[in-house]
Every structure is written in C-alpha cells, then in structure tokens.
Amino acid sequence: MMIKESFKLAAGLCLGLCLYSCQKSGTDSDTLSQSLTAASKAQRLAEAGSNEDYVPGQLLVKFKDGTPAKNKTAIFTKLKGKQKGKLNSKAIPGFEDEGDIDLIETSSDVMAAIDNVKGASEIEFIEPNYIYRTADVSNDPYFTSAQWNMQAGGYGCQASTAWGNHKTGSANVYVGVVDQGYMYEHEDLRNNAGVNPGEIPGNGIDDDKNGYIDDVYGWSFYDNAPTIYNGSDFHGTHVAGIIGAEGGNGIGVAGVVWNVKLLGAKFIEGTTGNAFAAALAIDYFIALKTKQKLNIVALCCSWEGSASSKNLEAAIKRANKAGILIIAAAGNSASNNDKTAVYPASYKGDNIISVASINRAGNLSSFSNYGANTVDIAAPGEVIISTYLNNGYAAMSGTSMAAPHVAGAAALYASTHPGASMKEIRTAIMNAAIPTPSLSGKCVTGGRLDISRF
Image (cartoon, rainbow, N blue to C red; front, top):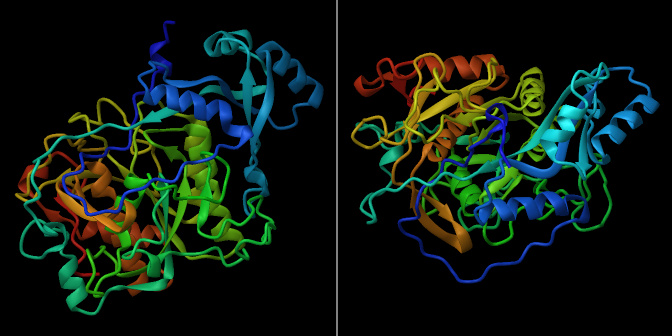
C-alpha cells in the first residue's frame, strides 16, 4: 500500500548499542490489556519489519466543541469504525475547555477512511495513530570510559563541580520519564523512585480517582497496566539513571542529580510506541501536578518522529500551561532540524528544550541532528554509562542519552531555586551554556550544558 508522504513517520528512541553490562539473566513477560491489543500487535509487526508508519486500523479524531452525538455517530459510520479509547484532558483541573480525542478502530484502510470524511464540518482534526520506532546508533565496541559526561574540566556537563558545592538535588523535585518503563527497583534507582502519594499500593482501588488503579510508580500506557517495568525496559532504565541514579552511595554510577524523585509513564514496548499513548502519558503527569500537587518540573522525552501529530502537540501545549518542561532528543539522523523537522523536538513552545549530542572531545556527535534555530543546546551523548537491566550498567550513545542530562539539570536547578518557574529554569539552562566551537551555528546557544553554577 502506498502511503502519502505527509503522513509518513520514521521515528525512534535515539538509542545506541549496548557496549558493556553486568546483569542477571531473566525477563518477565508482559500481558497486554484487551483495549490496546490491536495497537500492541501492530507495534510488534513494526518491530518485525513491517513498513507501516501508523497503527493499522486506528485513527485519532477530535470533534469540534458542541458536535451532537448523532453527528459523531454518522462520522463513525463513514469511518467504518467504533470508539476504542478516549483522551479526556478536560478532566484535568485547569483544562476544562479542552475537547476529547477519540481513538477509533476502523475496519477500513486508514487513509481511505480519512478521505471518506475529508471536509466534514464536525471534525477539528483527524490523523493516523502514528508509530514511533527506535533508531540505533553504533559506537566504539569496547568499554573504555568512565563517567566523562559528569566531569569538570573537559566536555562533560560539569556536574561534579555542583556536587562539590553540596548541590545534589531535592526529594521534593519530580521528573517524569516518558519512554519505555524503567527498573525502579534497580540498586542505584530505588531510593529515587517516586510514588503517587494518592495511591495505596496493591489494594485494587483507584484511590486518587485518576482513572488508573494502583499507579504507584507510574503507569504503562502501552498495555494499560500499573506495571512500568517488565524486565526488558533497557532504554527507559538507562535514561532514568542519567537523570537520577543515586550518587555518593558507593554503588555503580551517579546521575546528574543525586536526590530526585522519578516517575514512569511507559508508552513504548521494545522499539515502538504511538502518538495516542504518548499524549496520554503526558496528560498523566499534568494531572499529577495539578491534582496531587507534585512538583513535576520536567518530562524527559528521548524519542523522535518526522510526523507532526496534532494530538501530541496539544498535549505538549497543555504541559506548557501546567509549567512542565519537555526535554526532547534532537534526533539521530545527522540532519538539520531547521530544514527537516523532528518531533517532539521541533514543536514550537516555551516549554521545549531540544538537545543535541556531543562527544568527550567536544565535537558534535556524528549521528546528532542540529539546527541553529530549532535545536537549543548540546549535552554529552556518546558512550554514556548508566543503569541497565537487572541491576546492571551499560554504555549507550544517542541524543536519547543527551536529553536526560538536561532533564537532570532542570531538576537540580529547581532544587537550588525553590519556587522557580518553568521559564526561569529554562532560561537558566540556556544562559549557562558554555560556547563550544563545534556547536557554533549548530544550535541556538552555540554551546553545551553546564550546571556548575546551579
């Protein structure tokens, strides 16, 4: 089947090859909920080499405000579909004016279904449920470095200087990992694993009435379950460790911020996720901030795609309104984002920080995207050692590894400047960038992350 270019998506997690790991064997199998079975099967097909760029048989539809139920029913009939899910952002305090977004399962070809309702006055937007794919990056096959990325004096993020000044974070600051799940019981992460204070573990009740039962450590929007780690979530675990592996404990590695609370919103299993689940994950954190009053300062989004989803963009705008930063990987295609956009990094918003990758020699990584107007800053992204599966540690490369350095920086700044606004945190990160020759004309700041003054 030919797919129109405007709907194509070649997306991924911007991740690298594992160079070294020390881990126990064994992987828990995941169980998919019936409501997401179709999406999950489609994602597994994509992992196996399917050329589809969206979940087969699924559409996202936002109706205009005030559309009568009978008109919606008529549209569903034209789409040969039925509602399988709903993103209900208007239930979040402060977003009562937001409309619902329906996940529709159709028996028709997706693009043909969209053509059948083209021009319908009731529809604000309709789009495929785009798939996000991983994009591997190769690097040195030998484990040869320690945590150069945290050091002062070289091209690291200067975190060690901040630590030496007794700036190591605060348990009152939260960062959301929108990714795969993460191993919250890892020996280097368990003391920084955040919990939903409104939920009583294991009682089978939605105590905080947010629609998710027993979401203690977060929620899996991939299989609609409270299990955010299934034994194979290596990417999310690695990202979490860069942000907030416990420092000073004599174990493994140290994250950018030693003391922080991490929460997981899993929307990717293996190598794929989709736009509907990603938006649900972002809204989940917005609700935790507005309802539970958790001090969520940033969401780490270490993934990329070439299609602009209005559904995902709307969720990011809601995060902006809620005062939550979106730290986005710039992408791994060695391309100019000013010319070829990558999402979510290329969405326009005061809450977005797009992050490129540099190596230990201070050079822009060969795989890293760049953009004088659309990529904000660079951070270490090559041969980054962090937490891995089953209490292991591994080195990985990619802009996926660069973005969590900036997410950790946001948490550190928030800990040293209680009450700082989202705008203030973003400005501080941008203003502190160290000018770097390889980044001149390649990003907005022309420099790399420096948290030594935080």
